[in-house]
Length: 412
Image (cartoon, rainbow, N blue to C red; front, side):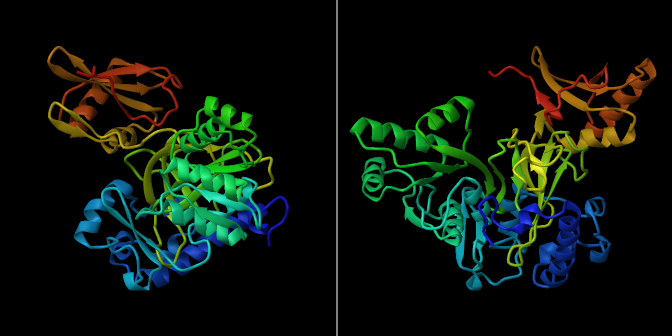
């Protein structure tokens, strides 16, 4: 039931009750879905579904990463064996760059965008201008389904044809905008150039950076704009609210932050890769690694929503780097961290000395010693099969940015 402040009571439920409900749904979903989804069965091999009682237990399950989807789908088209539903029973079969194929099921608000649109101020019978693409990709359909769930009328504008879009805006006077922030700026500038009034009062933006300067310019045009974090596989994963303090995780998702290249959760507040379990019967993604970096914000939002909050997009987690002709992966650095649990953050800095690549492992340790340095050098060589140096640094001195491998080689 929509209220003035929140989309429904689920947004303000007790966090412990939400957590219990999420894992109860997870058990039910996996018991049913894995019969028709061979990749899901393989992911759960050796793991008892009944043992997945909390986030700690969920770490038994390996992460499937977005970067692996292209190869997995080529091996088992169209959806890599991750969907238990026959393709012909779905609503849409969508294509993202790659190409990567994405299903859309037939349920209302299948992508979970209605909450984000509601949080941005859009309401029943508002007219909204949807400038996300409708051509093959999910964006336009993702946001339109949520707008329809709210009871809004939608102008399916898509991308491009700026003059035609401005004509439609002038005639139909939408109060809401959905699309990238940079295209909103283009529309505002074009309306101003042709002397057309700007009818937009609310906006939900995604898909591109929204720097403070652009936020101020759009606010100056009288538009209250909010951000959403969405992907083609997950729909809307988190969204900004009137609190203007991070992005609230969407209902129906289990979100973890893990050390890049691994499935190991980091402490709250540490930057890591966003890994999401989507409780959706038609596309039940289990520990799906987005490749995006973020961190959990402490405490609850002042807007009254009680779900976890993320700091927003903080970069890419895929830091696999070629050194001396061989790839080095964050997972190899994580192996060193597990061998030396007393260490803090680790960072492998890749540099250049003349014509030669170099590696320097920076390790936070409270008690540096030559012995520890030698042990770490041996561990680095064992993990990467290449020699590198080690620098012991003070605890807390390495930045909390999720970066495990830093490629500092000059661009040639």
